[in-house]
Image (cartoon, rainbow, N blue to C red; front, top):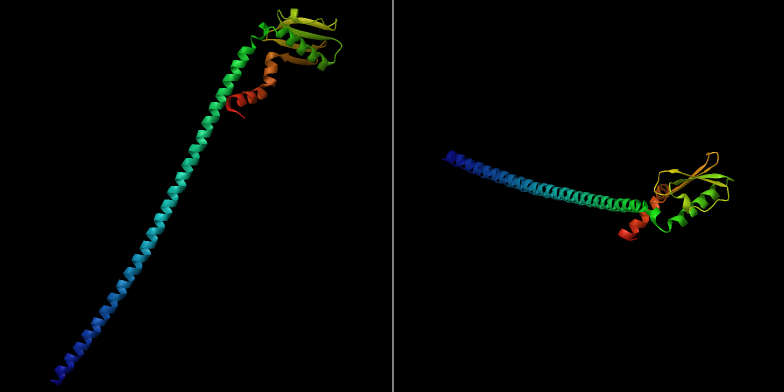
Length: 190
């Protein structure tokens, strides 16, 4: 009987010890599971924050691109409007020869070109029919009606080495940038 008691006592102690080991193992497993859940929660939160940051960055990029595209379209529309105005102006300029101010303009540009040349004699090339508008150059000027242009004159030295282009087209081209600025200011302010 003492042996039964001893065996029973050993079995009982072994069961208690086994129970304690099992409880301790369960506690450690529970602790590891809760630590892993906490780590996973942190990783999920970090991944969600990273995804949210990426989405926000993409949203900002798309907005920036859309703004840039809108500016480009506005700039193109403004450019088209300015070009249209310049084309209208150029077409209107072609009828300048019919105005009352044209003879004054023609004499002014020819006089300016002659001063610029500083030559004792010069040849003035005009559109056919414009010779009647030109005041006499005191024999210093030979007038030839041989150019095809909207108006104005080509003035050159007698030997033809130096030429001053005062045609309406040339004057238009030389002032085109200034005209663009003026048209921009009229159409869009500033």
